[in-house]
Length: 140
Image (cartoon, rainbow, N blue to C red; front, side):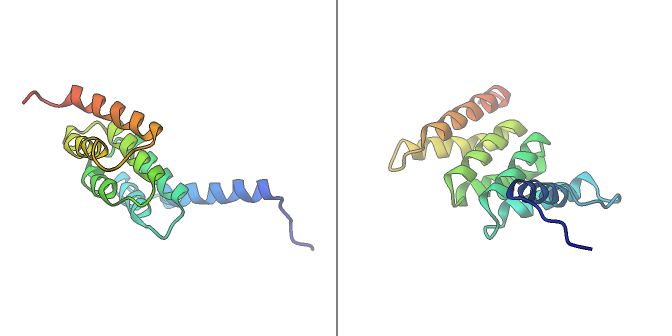
């Protein structure tokens, strides 16, 4: 019996499905949502992984509105090693909606007005997230 062969597109799809399975905690029925959030955070923080994997984990945390992930996402925002990952974190923090992230986002915006320049799409994401969180933040 010969081994099956796959073209490049099929290999990509299989790889993405395996990655999704791993990110979502595999096929283990006893996993809790907390286990899944921790796994996603470990993937997001693992600088030896591809940016696309790390970004997907961050996006998933935002979609799940994982408030417990906010402090580690803020740390990741401060230490990120790619603009794309930084943008993913900014968007996720806005999606989670925890006003505790607002000071970190304001710091990124204020820093951008100084020495650094944020590319347009990141700046748009930053302003949207700040606007979302400002509406939820209690007046000072």
